[in-house]
Image 1 (cartoon, rainbow, N blue to C red):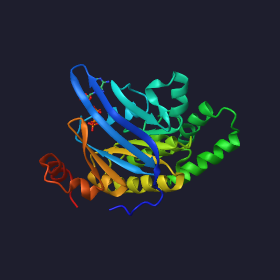
Image 2 (cartoon, rainbow, N blue to C red):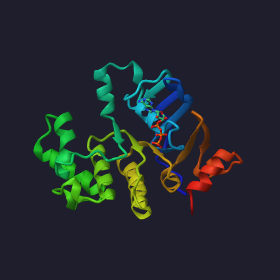
Image 3 (cartoon, rainbow, N blue to C red):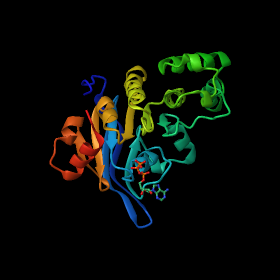
Length: 257
Ligand SMILES: Nc1ncnc2c1ncn2[C@@H]1O[C@H](COP(=O)(O)OP(=O)(O)OP(=O)(O)O)[C@@H](O)[C@H]1O
């Protein structure tokens, strides 16, 4: 289990969600979700496929609008923002997508440079190079700087995706299934990286996953989405210390120590 994390500031909430509802046509996905993310915390959101984990982080990053409820991110109510304000907020949120979302026709360096050229127009090439070196070193892949994404392994692509997310120095990281499709050892490396990113860049993160090894390795706190609400929350051990058959089934089918 993860060691207690002294970097978490329980007096500062980075994200607050209250009474969040979201439906698609007649299908109610989120049915009254409440959630706090504290400064410096790694919060894992567990849930079976289709329970609404991706919908939740899309609402947090303003990609989807809630039907009702409060969603406050870094002190701002997301669905009250103008498009310009939302763009500014999104720069403080690093979204690490499931498929890494690298541009295949660009080198690693160009992939990392792209957000800097777009969002920090006054930055010199020299400063860009310096920042690229820092994030590549942070993900342990300095040597890949001139490679194409197609030349990288799945784990390396995932790392470069995380590096690209880090390059704008986000305050909040949202990881969507960070270990999906990776072998157990590469997954473990990604879990270690998520913890290192938290320490080194002082980020607050939501990690959505159904990989229980990942949840255990990175989660300061774990919440489980069941039937549209967070039914369980606590440390990894607390969440699974229950007679709720739905939770036990999740553990038994997914986790081998
Ligand atoms: N834009 C959309 N329009 C209609 N339905 C949607 C939309 N986005 C998500 N849904 C539905 O909402 C439900 C929850 O989807 P979501 O992608 O959040 O699941 P998830 O928990 O992330 O699952 P997985 O682990 O498989 O990624 C699914 O039934 C999905 O079909």
